[in-house]
Length: 308
Image (cartoon, rainbow, N blue to C red; front, side):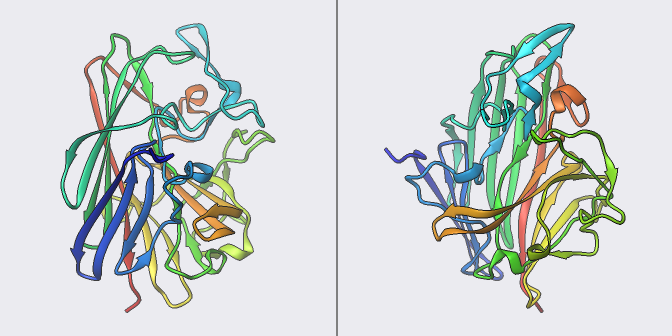
């Protein structure tokens, strides 16, 4: 068995050439995505665990929970510490979970995984994620059902490392409309919020990635045609657009100077659509409370727009 389990290969004939994707059984990771031969994520080998969380699903919270501790109905909860270097719980509860297939076609796959009551999270959830190729890229739909008896706090995120073909990632221009960002302490937990105006965190007009170092979450995102849209563009104007519906009111931009993937160590950028910021179980911001039996659907996707 491969380290990432079964590989689900998707293909679709699109307007700009063949659209392809590979999704893994482990963590429902988006391991590969391309449009017309232009690769849009940093692919990694199937026998390697997703490096730095590449492409994995982040449920029932994205990013980190401070010291893994939070309070529910006056009772202290303690999650397992999954990031020893900071002492935090990170990236939800499905990072090491194998998903099962519930629907499959040549251009789409739906994967599902349960979350059972466990240390620090006494809830039962049925979760799903659908990857569907479309004419210009990929549409992703997350579903969460509260299968338990108590009201459950949930949030959703994803962790793709993005690229625009063979252009070195540090030569890409990143544009994010967020007017507000989250300053972090030494363990990468938000200490509050601040305006991006006049700071090196301001990506509203676009910044070349070589000129910034980011591990930054943004909110107060603009809406374009009812969606939040973030972009990476190469010097020729070829553009990757990461979009999210109105549930994805936060995005994390993380520049990694030595990402290890298929092509070895290189600069890479993760752009993470999120429905809540870090430490949501304590902050409450963006957190969704599902009643027993309630379902929540939220979507995001990746588009490739070639230069005119």
